[in-house]
Amino acid sequence: FVWRFGYGSNIGLDVLKQKKNLNPTKYFTGTIKGFELYFKQGIPYVEPGWGAVRPSSDPNTELHGSAFYIPKDEAEGLDRQEGGYNVELNQFISYDGERVENVGLYVPKKKEGSEEKKQEEGIPSMRYLRLLQKGAREGDLAKHWIERLDLQEYYITPPEVRSQTREGDLAKHWIERLDLQEYYITPPEVRSQTLKWISEFHSDPERKDTTFSAEQLSKYNGSDPAYPAHTCVMGYIVKLESWVFPSWKGHTITRRNLLQFNGKSLDTNDIRFNQPRFRPLPNLNECSEEEKEYLYQNLESILHQGGTIVARLQDFLNDQKEYPNDDTI
Image (tube, rainbow, N blue to C red; front, side, top):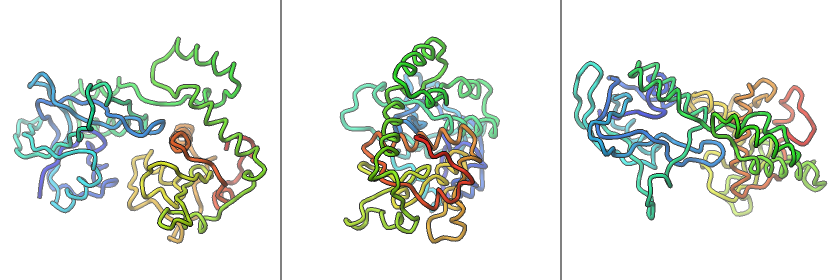
């Protein structure tokens, strides 16, 4: 058994057990001294910031979170999941005063050529920040730490920005939003370009009526040059031109994204084609506005990294009780 320390999405005991599939035999909440929390750059437009730590100039600075004792093989699996981090051993002090040595802390691997801290910083998504807030409350972390997390700004695209498609309206709305801004939002030029690409797909006679079956999509996992990597978000099949998670290739990831948003285990609940309970696929009409926004940001992230919408997924369309046939979804 070995110790690991959670300060980001790994704070809460429920998350460790249900989403990470870990089996802690000991669990404490408390602090590690000498480190400060920040958010490093993540995936543009959808998960633009991940929790990270760095040494503090004040050795008495306290990083709050949870220490959990897990089997070594589970720790090795968690370390692989956290591949962008090194494990550094530190002393942990619980809120009850118990000291634990050699607790593994995930510290971001340094990027070559990175000079200033600001270059590495990002902003968390609402989904990710809620995991931290929930875990902090579940572990009864220090009141001032919970208050800090509650005041942390997060990335979100207001629905009214998405609905504005005319250039003039976007400009007017952006000025109004800047005057009232309380949190980071998608720049209007980014969302405007996304809407343009979607509109172009629906207007293209060679693409708009093209559909894939889930069986066809499953072949496009990039393992065969004849079937380059594609994925599907919200029923849109996108040909990929940049890195994505391997699990996304040849797969419709709408269900997976919703599981991620709601903090549920991907390993046990994500279902691929030809597996039991693959159908029905998620119905967008049953999703909350926040869930739809997270799905939309996933699609946006792929498109703005060079992806191209080439078709729609027929299985997805069939499983919508009703869906608009306009230029959005």
